[in-house]
Image 1: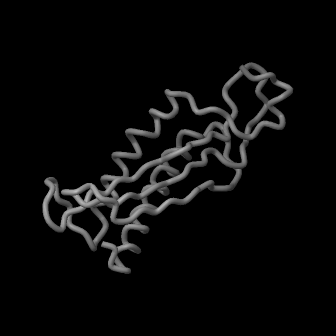
Image 2: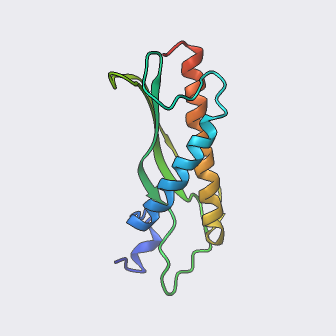
Length: 144
């Protein structure tokens, strides 16, 4: 429960289980789609020599959008979501970590609360593409 007067200074809000679910499936689908566009790797479906497991995660997702409530006067927010995005590369046979990238991402820019769903979809795509760029960068330095 939030007190209306207290919310003026509050900039982070808990992410409900429902909201977390809104990220999980779309992020997985988007990341799998974007992985297909990474040129330096070939997608394999079974473990084997020279095969690695690539996993992308959103960790510690924070909302900057106040929950709907009577009397809510916010029409724009400076940022919608913030998350730590993680890329893990593991050997497909031993599950040993070969490489990991971790970065905190918080896009800035005024967003109308009416456009939060659209902005969320765009942000999921952005985070997925960041992970694919990190994958390409790891390949460029021969890891793995």
